[in-house]
Structures are given as structure tokens and as C-alpha cells.
Image (tube, rainbow, N blue to C red; front, side, top):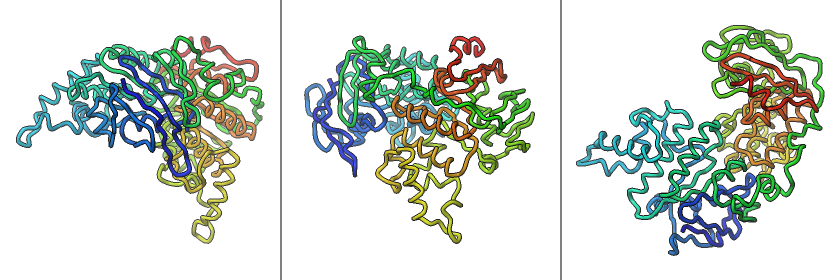
Length: 500
């Protein structure tokens, strides 16, 4: 058994963990849930050896354990599969699986590639997947890379004589339903040789895969349940202090769109992605696009955002014909893009909150050809108050913020830039239920201000709940359009019929 007892950890200005107790028993999956900033990531890093606790102890099979780094943890059979993934995309699958362990295939300074490739195939066989071990990781789907991460963790079996402990940090955040089914099947099949800690914001998934669930709030463990003894709504209430209610998507705040057409696509298309797509977005209107992966919905948002140039049809922004070849052109037409990968595409993580907020339009803080840093900080403070961004201050690096607060910084940037059109590409991905509700509130406020919004989301529930109208796509074409006005929301089944 792997256990943490009385674990506390503080950073500058933040008490991240407060006297945390948790145990991972043999051959079980332990769920770990909590809002962004509850302390889950800090606890996982301590268990993985990348952070050291200020106080408290770790024990493994009843013996005290001191982890100085991730290599120490690996030496005791503790491995981690990261949310952002740790694979090096320019290396092969086999090189990634045995990264840092190449010595076992090396003799007289020469690496035996055949032996390493064969060993990698054996690791992948443990989880029942067939992936070309000589292929570069960059050519794999996200789901396939997740399987490689899991196989990489299983290599620890070769160096320890006890069952493994594998930490899964948000492993399903960008997976499709079918990919999640595959991952869960692999985890269940591996329970005889490993224990797992599963971190996710998707409460239904946590209950589906876990044997027990720990709930964290404000750096402390506030509840422990057997999965069969608790429901997702009950866990939600413990996490955020209120129940999951019908106002989750703030439908009562859904305003009526204005008559002015802000965006008009006419027979728009990109070769190989989508074609003959026509729609209008009015001022204050939220248009949701529903469809499975590969339906063309992501490519539409990328085209309107200037990332993917159109090859056919017409696009008009406020009655002016446009043909974007770069994101900069879209920004000049008052289009803001909130990407799904906010850590990669949405923010410069090492820059401060203030610097990220003004990044899209420095003119608002330029004085005499130079940035007025006092003005920049003042502007950031105003947005921090307005959007209730939890941060030590405007000078804090964005990498130190929780996911929900990072998303608010991205929104603040586009509002500072005066965007009249927002593209929301999976805006709540990776956010806990409380942070999601805050984003929904912001989206409703932006809509009421007359901002036109194009939305694609992780779930049909969210797409339907937030939108005024929903377009359904299949195989690059729009197959149906549904009214989703307040009090007249379509049923998921109706959309699914047109999606598949």
C-alpha cells in the first residue's frame, strides 16, 4: 500500500496542501476530484516525486519513503501519465517508451535498436495495442500517444519487485467517448498488476472507473467515498458547496440576439475538411456546432480564426468580404480566438497576467512609443476584479494560475482588444464544474453585450445549453440546424441522429 499522511505544502502566498491523508491500496483505482486550485496537482506531484512536502510522510508497504525526484519514485514503481503528455514528438515510439533507460540496450556505446524495439512491442502488448514502435510520436493521435504513455509507465515493472502505482492526471480530457472506453478497458485489465490514481473533472467517469473517491477542497481532503455509495451530483455539491441545478448553463440569462448580422458564411469550404457551409451569426448570438471528430467543425472555427485559409465560398464580417490567410488578419477584423489548448495556443505561460491580457493589442497601453507598465498593471487589475481572476496579482506568471483562471485571462485579452466576434473552441476543457459555471456566466454576459460567438464544445449538453442555434455537421457538411432559444432546447437524441 502507498500512503500519504499529514502532507502539507506551501508556495509563496499559497497554502496548497493542508494535512492531507490518502492511501492507495493494492489492485484498486482511486479517484481524486476537486475544483481547480483544490490541491490535486500538487498532491500528484508529491506522490510522483517532483515536489517535496513541507511536512508529513509517505509510506510504501508500511515503510517510510523519501522521494527526492521522479527517478526515486520510478525506482519504487511509481509512475505518472501527464495531462499534457511527456512524449518527445520528434522521437520514435520505442525511443519514448525507454527514454532514460537506453543503457539496458547499449553495449560498448552502441544501441541495439532491434532489442529496444522488441521490448517496446512487449510493453504495448501488455495493454493490448498494436502501434508501430518505429513511427515518430508526432504522427500518432492523442489517444495513441496516451497508450504509449501508459506503456512507458509499465516499463517500471522490469526494475521493481512489487505492483506498480500509476498516477493518471486528466487522461481523458481530450479523448473521444470511444477512446475513453478503450483506456478504461486497459486500466481495468491492468489492475491485477498495478494500482491507479485517476484525476478528472468528469465526475461520471471518476465513478465509472474508480473503487474509491477522495474529494479535495481548498488544499484538504474533505471526503472519501466508495464509488458505489455516492452519486455525481452529491460529489459536485461537496466540491463546490452547492448542488448541480437546472441553471448550470445560465439559461435564464440567455438574451435575444440583435438583428445585425456580424458573420456570414456562404458555401464556405476548405478542401479535404468541409464544404458548402452556410450560416449567419447575429450580434449577441451564440451558434454552437455539434459533430463527431472529423466532422469538419474544428476546421470551420480555424478558418474563421484565420488559421486555415478557405478554398471555396465566401466569408463576410460586418458586410465586408474577407479571405483570411493568417490569424493576424482575423484579429484586425475584431475576431478573438479562445483555443482548446490554452497552455499551448492561448497563453505565454512564463509571462505575467498583465502581459498576457494586453498581448493582442498593446496600443491600449502604449504611450510615446513605449509600453506604460503602470497603465498595463492598472488595466490588468481592473480585469482581475471584473472577472474575479484568482491570482496573487497582475505580475504573477500565468503558469501559476489554475485552468479556470487561465481561461479568464484569455477572455480578458480579447475583451481588451475590443473583439466583437469570439470563437470558443472547447472553452471549458479541463475545468472543474465550479469554474465551468463561472465561464458560462461570462459567456452570457458577453452575449448580452452584443458579441457574436461561435462555439464548439466537449459535450452536447454544453453546446445545447449555451447556444441560441445549433448546427450539426457530418462528413464535412451541415446536416441540420436546430433552434435552441430559451425554453426551447433540442434533445440530444435529435442531434445525434444527424451526427452519425
